[in-house]
Length: 207
Image 1 (tube, rainbow, N blue to C red):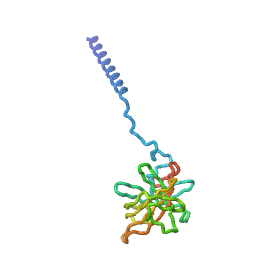
Image 2 (cartoon, one colour):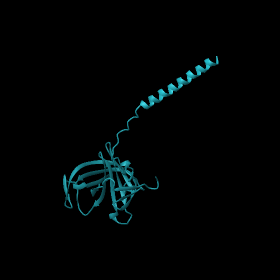
Image 3 (cartoon, rainbow, N blue to C red):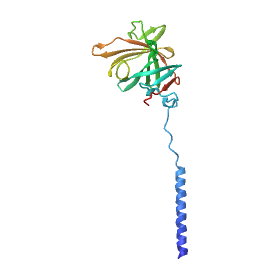
């Protein structure tokens, strides 16, 4: 009887070992699911930070200059969205105040804008020459915006815009804000494309 019980126990142990081996073989034979495709130039992988996450209270550094994000406009037209951020060098000068636009069309485009003053320039023609540079109109429309932080605008509103492209990553943009009194005057800005990896973002203390 004891011999029979011992044989049965040995059979059970052998069966268990065989089951474990088969399970391990099945697991080893299953290939791990392939990783989803990724954009090798994705902004979130940059050590300098993701411009799409910019908000009031952050600080950016570009070509050795540090600028504070004082406020942001979140713009929407149809299903398309983009952001414009009010930057201030906090040096007390008008020249230290600029805007930074961030949009995906479809790749990420970051442009630093400086107000262009002293002329009655309007987007009245498809081609404009400013300071010896020729710009061609690429877009014209009206968008809704939501204001965050300090922008000099109300919480919500609408803005008409006209965008022009020039050579070497240069841009010319016009904006006029729509209010109860109608459309305001055109404001012109000259822009330069910010190359990838040249803008460093320092999140504000609220993060």
